[in-house]
Image 1 (spheres, rainbow, N blue to C red):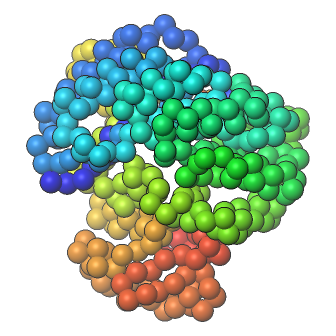
Image 2: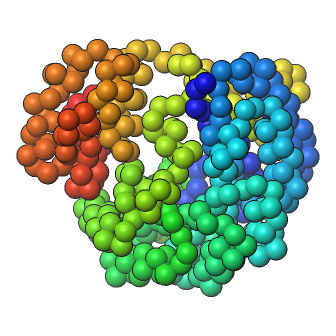
Image 3: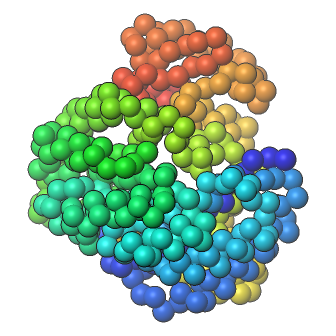
Length: 376
Ligand code: SF4
């Protein structure tokens, strides 16, 4: 039986944040039709892909899944469990935004079986939150984390964004310090990226906002790694840190190149070397599922070369390249050819080579993209 992952994209949001390029909509008109479509899609894929695999994680992403009623997610969860072999210890994550859940609602999410919560806080600084057009303030963010812990979530993650315009190093460290006063086991930190088509991008192009430069971004990133490592949060991917034993099972499935099935608008799937993705528009998604029981917009079969490069990239960005696993999948030519460069990186303290494992150091994570460009 293969270990695989399940992803559900819930596209509904309260409003559109200025920096966000995820597909999300702010009207709830089609909430019920969407639920029916998801159920149909689940049933369609279970017939094809359930026989040889066990699903070890379920991830509700978005959008804002925590906007939905717990009963809504329960129906999806029950459907998944009835249609797929879901491991009884599966990690079941829900992305949550402060301002969309009170303690009672969190309690109900816990009761329906969500056992990991990933809270999109982004910043504890009131000015940053206003700039990002988040709907919550610092106090609501803190309260949400504490409420989650009080109703029984042991596995709590939060997201923070650094290198915001005018964010000083001191302010960023304050953010990290505040996060670590809370009962969390995992932190994801992302640098603010300018995505084409976002409101923020327009603001920058119009000269209303000035982004900070790349060197400062790198400095904040290295500060983050040093700080979180010193506080017992181990880095296991370029942007992700956890207490030992609390690495995200679901994201690790992506990074270890395991299969996954995705349902809902814009969701991607990757099974047996084939990748496909759904229509992004909610209306199109619903009408396609109505017609065909699936909403595939396009697909690709991964070539051997693509597979190799994706595998190496994902491994080096996360817990490293397991050479035994690598040799089972690919010929050793590339490793032999690249070894002198790996040795050089080891001398520069950017990477460690142990008998059957090649892993970036914290300093190496900071220049991961450059390393990947040189080897792939
Ligand atoms: S809440 Fe999240 S998904 Fe929705 S618009 Fe804001 S950043 Fe995007």
